[in-house]
Image (cartoon, rainbow, N blue to C red; front, side, top):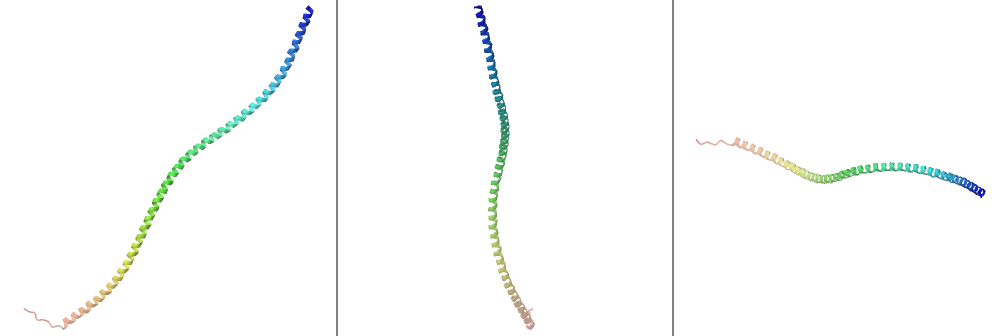
Length: 164
C-alpha cells in the first residue's frame, strides 16, 4: 500500500501539474484575448477621447462666437433703439417742417394776392394821377387865362379915385 499510495500520490501530483499547466495555458490564451480586447478598447477610447476633445474645442469656439454674436446683437439693439428714437424725432421734425411749409405757402399766396391787389391799386392810382395831372394842366391853363384877363382888365380899367 505504501507503494500504491506513492503511485497514487505521484499520479495525483502529476494530475495537479497537468491541471496547473492546462489552466496556465488556458489563462495564457484568455489573458492574450483579454489583452487584445483591452488594446482595442483602449484605442477606441483614445479615439473617442480625441473626437470628444475636438468636438469640445468646436463647441467652445461656437460658444465664443455665440457670446460675441450676443454682444454684437446687444450693441446693435442699443444702436437700433437710438436710431429708432432719432427716426421718430426726425419724423416729428419733418411733420412740423411740413406744417410750417404749408403755413408759409399760405402766407406766400396771401402776400402774392395782396401784392397783386396793391399793384392793381397802384395802377388805378396812376390812372387817377394822370387824370388829376390833366385836370391840373387844364386848371393851370384856366388860371393863366384868367390871370391874363385880369391883367387886361387892369390895363383897360381906369383908376378909381381914392377918398382922402
